[in-house]
Length: 300
Image 1 (tube, rainbow, N blue to C red):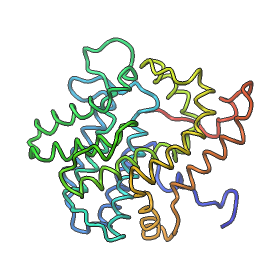
Image 2: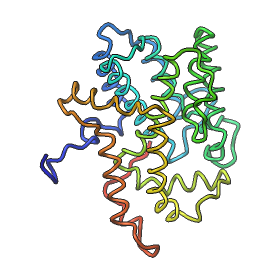
Image 3: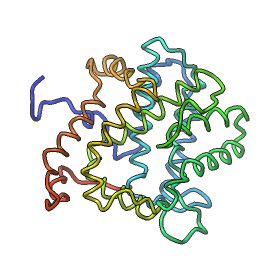
Image 4: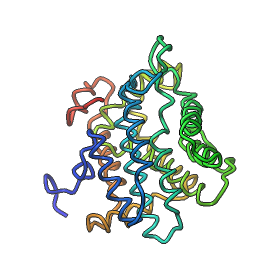
């Protein structure tokens, strides 16, 4: 593999700043996994959740958190579709129904950050520690309003619980092995989606301010969080391998089938981000905002 401009980069395949481009790729990937899959339900939910983030969903404001935004949800959404495809190629048994439910859950996994119209103080970041529960409550209301079968509410709620940073996966009482597998895949997609993003490091100061607004004071300042992200990555590798059953290993099969590349491009993108971080953030006096500015950060 050549270096420099010819290097294969995950960020080059899909315009992640356009959710409709992301959805087009998700549909392509799903049709590779399930040639006769129906996408009407997922399309409707995608439209509703996109409207929700943009402030066009009745009763809710637009998303005002700059880290946990529609871009992050899009990252996780596409990563989840790729994992499903890879799992199918690796002979895992995942039904079309469960695949669609898992992707719907991915779209809803961070809606708990979004404020209702009558919530006029602060930003959605104040809900950081309870956003998983708020996401589940939104999903329950949405499912009931749209006449989803009741058993699907529990299935999707259990999957969504896997995105909680402190969630103990072994304590979740999944209804089926399929739901457990997809829950672990969702937890994986949530983590690798954000950490592989081209602007992940540049957006870390936004994450610090979300923590600060929710009174999570484990970091002294922006720089402290940025420096400690390297240690966080080592912790995450353990979580991916143990708690989530190493389902990250499904990615190479997808990339081989989709692009003819027998690699886990997510792992490569994350390693590239960590290398960039270590190369440029070495002393506390550095102008880290300038050092991290590899590309323009675009917000929804």
